[in-house]
Length: 305
Image 1 (cartoon, rainbow, N blue to C red):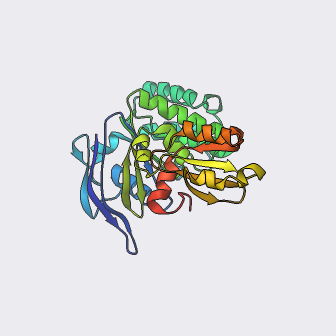
Image 2: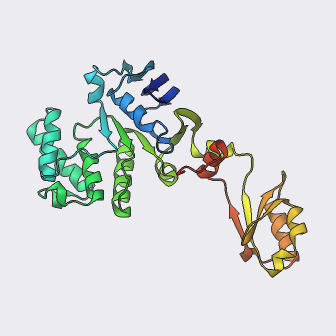
Image 3: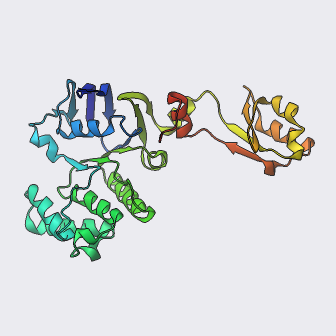
């Protein structure tokens, strides 16, 4: 559906994207995960044709994307990071204006506006001015505006920044419904939990480069260890350091010991040994590898740094 071939985009002082190549399959929910300034928004602007790359090319449904290629833009709905709404107009008036850009027949547009506002729980507020809306409501309306022409592809550039949990969940539910209905979605975020909840496949981008790509399970499997075990530090466990070290390397933290198991570690054997040495399982926490673990392993820093 989307083929990105060796894209490079430079600005006067930085290289925003450095030889990026990606494929997004039809009807896929694809995540682009990376910190602020990693190049996510630049890539979205290239996908929609707002910018031309310095090198490489992008094809959507077999057609090359260019700044002059209006036909490819008709196949795309863009939810920008910055809100694109008229504050002094009602939600209904905003959507009427956006619908007119795509020359949608009047009755069809009316049906779509009603259906989509109901889907994001805004229909009862359709006559209210946008400036009276909360940030989350504006984000939901912004999403609806991008879908009025019923495009097969939706590009979402951090659509939940700075909103309340209720609106975030409403957006998630709506996007998952659209994906189930066959929409191809590309979703940029710097929130690990969003990528894990929504995306079937993920590319991690940092400093304009793709540093990893795959499903969450595929990425986590690349970690050099399976799990970390935390043991609460107390009078019982303090005297059992040698026991813990027999199962792996131990790091002494402020209020716990962190155990990274040796190769061939058997969890059942570990708990059996703890029981024999009067260490309750209640003092033990298992920490499975996560997407954040993988990002930290790759970059040496946390995503929000």
